[in-house]
Amino acid sequence: MAGGLAEGPETGSCLEAGFAAAMDAAQVGIYLLQDGLFRYVNPFLARMFGYAADELVGRRGTLDLLLAESQFFLVQERAIGGTGEHVAACEFFARRKDGSLFPVSICTAPSTFAGGTATVGTVLDLSAQKAAEARIRELADFDALTGLPNRRLLHDRVRQMLAAAERDDSPFALLFLDLDHFKRINDSLGHSVGDELLCAVARRLAGAVRRVDTLARLGGDEFILAMPGTHAAAAIDVARRLLEECNAPFLVAGHDLTVTPSVGVAICPQDGKDIETLLRNADAAMYKAKELGRNTFQFYAAEMNTATLERLMMESGLRRAVKQQEFVLHYQPLVSLQNGLIIGVEALIRWQHPELGLIMPDRFIHVAEEAGLINAIGDWVLCEACRQAQSWIEAGLPPLVMAVNVAPEQFRQGGFVEAVAGALAASGLDPALLELEVTERTVMHDADSSIGTLTALHRMGVELSLDDFGTGYSSLAYLKRFPVGKLKIDRSFIRDLETDADDQAIASTIVSMGRNLRLTVLAEGVESREQLALLRAMDCDMAQGYLFSRALPGDEITELLRRQPFLHKE
Ligand code: C2E
Ligand code: CA
Ligand code: CA
Image (cartoon, rainbow, N blue to C red; front, side, top):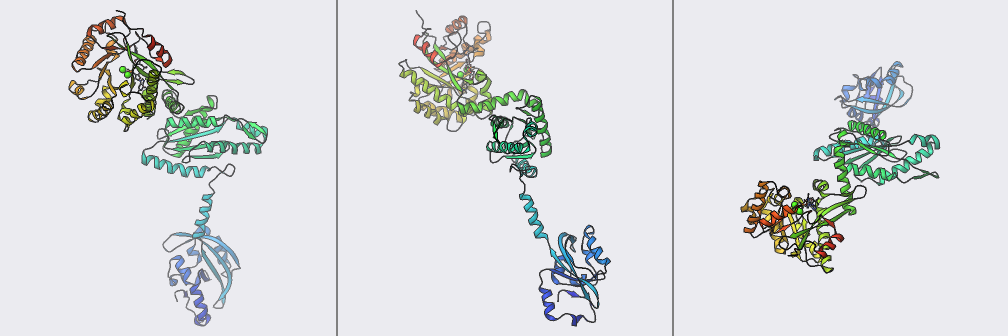
């Protein structure tokens, strides 16, 4: 028998064989206790505590197996000398032989042993049950009012998001959103209306965030949005969207209620790397937003709110502009110096901003490049420029070269040649009328692959010109390898052409070099008659500049093309 019974005169006769077998097989721990010591333990109990039966029987009692703090009941039991009254199940923490703790439930009843009073106890291991209860508590991670994740779940999720962000070196943003003057609604219309409003706000906000984000309610009118993979610019988009979501009134209990939120934004890692710090800083930023007059958002980092913010606003505005097609092309004439004929135009992009008006490309092209938007913008420019050129032909104007600027990133993207072919096919424009302007830097970056792209375009019949020429230190040897047809002398060499002997030398060198390589040379930024005269004297082929015309909208340039006002009369 694996269990043990204290040696005693009546032992053998006390327990019948069947009784002993039942004890052996029982799937609960059973003991007999007298004078504070076990007189019998069944095998299940011995296993449960990790002892051999004979290490317990006669040598230990319940007090040795339970945690001190949970022993009050047993002390009481010993006080009554093991005569014990019946005691309903009580829960304790017990200690196994190896020191590990586990929860048990013990139930005792009075008994006798060897003619004396004793206690019989039943012990259940509660480990599995407690684990299940903990799991159920875990499932109760949601705010009872709104059904949104609560603080506990938010903390869990954010910890995971932060670990992933660190691992992938990806950004993470935390938004703290607090409703403005919510207390007034509670005070004036009552808490049940306030509660309903919170639910309505929660629903609207939840509808405006991505599935990977966690929108939680911290209690009161405070909401948190945790956004993995989100940098500052994207956080602005979201903050704006959340503010917009609250623009329309909420219909609650027959009232049209308007609540505006104030939003604070903290970005990981610069504003904190753990949830506590991020929450605290997003909270502080939210208070700044309140101070600024509410219904707005603020970043925690002060510099985010000034210089960088403008840049970020630009980036987020550009994303919208791409989606809503807020760009227009203006066209600047390219004039032949031989006869004054406009033989082409350069398409120059402008951003028609809904609030700020017309924005020039120098202010946004580099932002678009950094934000990864330049390809989308460039594709639009290509298509629109080709469409315009073809529509002039269809309107009966003589064929014109349409020059389109190509950003470095756009030129290097896979599929650029196909994008050009697509724009030509969609518009029906003759490839010979399209000219792509790339800078020296663009093609020199990876000269070998550039040659491949340029050659493919050249084979399609598309013209290529080197823009801003003279600023990029191209070597002649290289130039010969590129299938380009035109050099555009950079404006910086033309500006002081009348007064600066170096600029004159550079310009005339480019002109004669171009002649030798059988390239057309165009001077950019020609503003005065004096500059024009010098360029003519150098035998420069073409010019572009304010002297002739600024870049104009499509309809105005059509006029100019019909009139050809720069034609030499001689
Ligand atoms: P760019 O390619 O060198 O274009 C010529 C710029 O010089 C244009 O400025 C034009 O308006 C300006 N310009 C022309 N004549 C004169 C003149 O006589 N005096 C002065 N001071 N300026 C003159 P814009 O339109 O502001 O464009 C600036 C730059 O933005 C362009 O320089 C080009 O690099 C870029 N850009 C414009 N449109 C596009 C586009 O569709 N795609 C790409 N990737 N870049 C573009
Ligand atoms: Ca250009
Ligand atoms: Ca240029």
